Image (tube, rainbow, N blue to C red; front, side, top):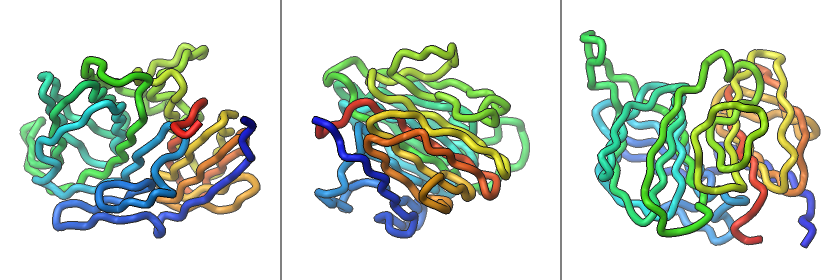
Length: 254
């Protein structure tokens, strides 16, 4: 069935929010007790949480299953540990993927209390975006992967940082278990532009800064756009910006 073209702008201030003493979380889609049957996903993307966690705090051990979870840190650092024995520190420019598969336990905590270089402790919050994509199939073995993406590469247009699709540009990316989805990231200086992919479903998230979207105007930090059956628009930075784009060639509702 042919999809009707649509550009759906979602403003940052309209997102549901979870705010407690250690967590400030803003949800692009239904999450936890913030349930809206008309806002459960776009394409294959079910979660796009914009999280800030204070120093010395974080998500204690909890379960997931049958989900591809991608984490991208914007500021600070995040410690990951899971029940398959994987552990690591995620920081800006390091992409992480966890395949929950048939079941996994993990925790995520602000890394600011650690002293990796022997220096003084600091109390910087960690700010990150966590995204959940439905896998191709349920019940797979849990898995974990992380990969550092070169900072200079991120300043040279949209860079694929996570993908289950066949790639033709030779770029390195962490692998997700969905052959119809890929995540691209760009860091833009003032006046720099990138062109969005052409795909049945796109999700653009302005993680930092301010940009203009061709044909739609200004987008501020935390704004998102859901594209259906339309792509190829240019986005241009009004101030230094970081943008995240999910390219999806299938939908949960299709």
